[in-house]
Image 1: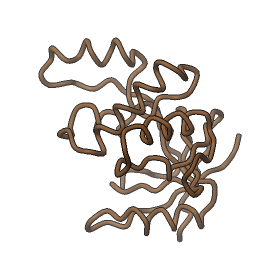
Image 2: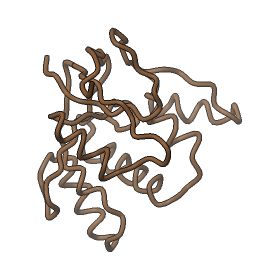
Image 3: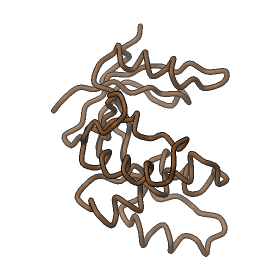
Length: 169
């Protein structure tokens, strides 16, 4: 088991919690079958948010492209819709909080652990490039390679993920 650092932007974590997959009530109910056919084990809050709550924007579209590439070419990799995101060090988590701000909330950084982790270059998730670069970046991301972007590594943790304690006190 390795220890990582997770930025909790919505203030939902507590020491000792175990993060897992959940089944959600989907509206309209006709879409429930879509979720269960793609992710029968359930979703993390990240996955539910992107699939069921957000309107289609560039970020949501990019998540769908990543998931499509993963499902077709890298099915052994964990779905981003079923993972908890983390960084490898406290310094990286603090840098992430600054680089990707959330209006009105800086978030709390927690130490977390998981048995199953996949490391990928977050810098490859850039949709301000030509479509061919998006596909190339998605391939490099799922291969766990740096690609043509500077390295900013994130870790996708497959649940269960255990919350060990606050890291930024």
